[in-house]
Picture 1 (spheres, rainbow, N blue to C red):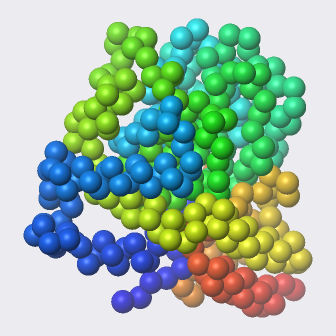
Picture 2: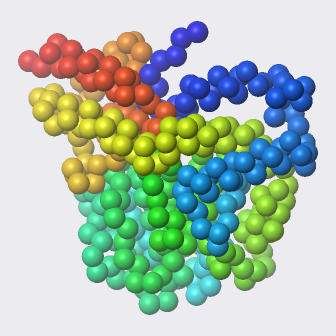
Picture 3: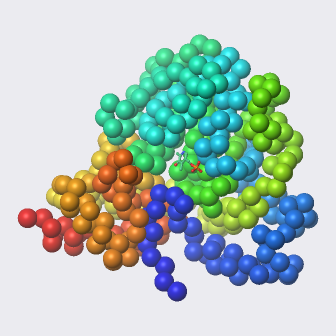
Length: 361
Ligand SMILES: *Cc1c(COP(=O)(O)O)cnc(C)c1O
């Protein structure tokens, strides 16, 4: 067996301990004689799995009782439709555009009402988080949508916008459970699992109870109703059972590690190893403003695209995979989610130092 250092942005690296445990339970889950994939979602055993997952997640994030936790399908993108359908009462929503995922959510919301851009960093290729002081929040906005960590560009919000009392909705897909979050500051948090907590397809939604109503357009697809999903505890239909099981294991892995404060410390230390190197390199440089730097997705370039290509190729040959930047952005991106050990980043930096010596003329 050989595992490489996988810097994929998503689906991404998962904790090795979690994968081994799942492998051990593949044929016979805890003496029940079947895999979790093969059991009824209505069984007592699965009920225990989903209940434990919710309990552990509530524990990790300190989720107040007046918030529901939902394990849904369709990835983060499905929420781009589900949120406006359910939350747009005045048919008005404000967006902070910090990259592709915000843009896509904005375009989708525009189908259901009036979506307005109140801040954007498009002028500089989304290399920073816009100034959040004194945003022109629409007086009748149903909510304000942000993408808290920008997977493609490598930026992150270090503070939340003042929404002037309006509901804050956060796409936290690529920073979910990488650090503590004050859930009470949000109306809704959602995260596709494949970035930091599990397999693709599962999406976790944390929603304040008062936002769950039966006031949505009559044409709203049944699977896109929070009231129904919530009343059925994520089991209106067959939920993504195996995904939920794996997410649950990742939650336990995080709890054993000491929770979100502990992982945050580790993540800061990890990111610093790479950023510190980039800041003194004569060949490579980080592509975003220092004060907006993501702890999860580190974007960088070398002096020219030919060297970028050579670097990506040689890195792959040396066991560092998926370092190519997003197709429209170019350069490199090292995604260093929770499961990436600091050894992986140190090894990458060592390789970059060697590459720099050989390629800097
Ligand atoms: C990956 C990602 C998405 C899209 O996730 P899907 O599960 O593929 O729909 C949305 N938002 C952010 C911030 C992401 O990183």
